[in-house]
Image 1 (cartoon, rainbow, N blue to C red):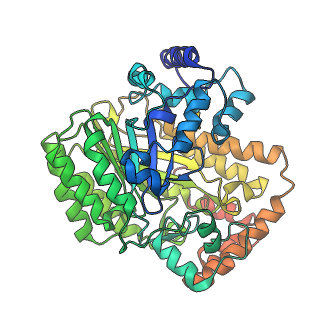
Image 2 (cartoon, rainbow, N blue to C red):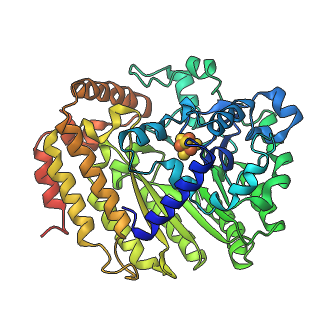
Image 3 (cartoon, helix red, strand yellow):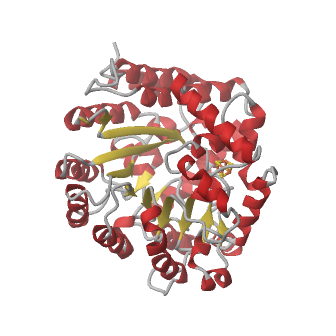
Length: 473
Ligand code: SF4
């Protein structure tokens, strides 16, 4: 919940946006995610991606962000119209007109609002410079996570080529990928989108406030290290640099990363470095979900990076899903241990635990669990609350926001079951179909890893959970 000061900031932002038009949003101009492996772009990350036409790119590398399609959406916003792809915000604004949508939250960011005036000088230009750039150089990845897709992981792409699509709704259908222009360009081929990126970067680099590399797995892409070299040669004291990694690679990759990141931090070539990694529960359960993960290796790599510089910050992104539940308390314990060990930089924790919930594919959403699991989720929330910081300067424990995010999980579950989803059984069936095939392809066993999910899930696991739950009184 925003405090009063934050609320005032959002009110002021909304006023400033409304002066331009009631649907104006700076993220459409200043934030971009670009998937160079298939030439897809979107602003912001909520609307679906669309293809950058090669004809536009030939004349203007800034078309990676300023496609004709996006400029048309901007034109609509300036007129006060609501472009359909942004329905995420229009739905939120319609549902509760007094609440703020991401249109306001994002526009109030330090990478957006200070650039309002400049943006409005030539708002329909095809040379708009983003301030928040997220880029994926390729889809090469050594993991095959259960909720990932073939155009994001090369390992999944190869697996799908071999076995075909899954017998469920989210089928990993390569023909469909082709039809909608999502098929990745093979990493070894020439890629005009990557070429255009390197042409465009010098034009925009000094204006960037946030630069984030995503993937695939960035550590297996040579462009990542090319960019880190570029950053060393072009210091920017206002740039927040972020990068994703699954941290599931041998030590040599981590050593190489350290070799680049530590001097960036020590020589202040960027303002801040934040690494983002992902894990959704702990032990064999986590390894089952994120196929390719080894928890021991993950922990060693995490510790090694933390120890490489006192300035290193890491965010653990947890996509809470149906398989997260049985051993989630173990992850909570682990995160507490790491938080305690690595402490804070100024007022900020070096380790942030960011829990979001999986909504897609729906058969892996935690809401497919029976209503009886509410008490379990309640206990997880209680566990985090028990270890909440007493004040925000407390060096140990979870922040208010981290605990709130766990509370949201509980609330979403409760709401879902109160509204009685008529398709509950359907998604449970889809779950079974998907994981039967998953086990065949990967040589894993849902039954052995999650013995109590045969129903999926009976009451016995609740007892087992309580037995293991050493923090509960
Ligand atoms: S209106 Fe909403 S969905 Fe559209 S760009 Fe802005 S924040 Fe994103």
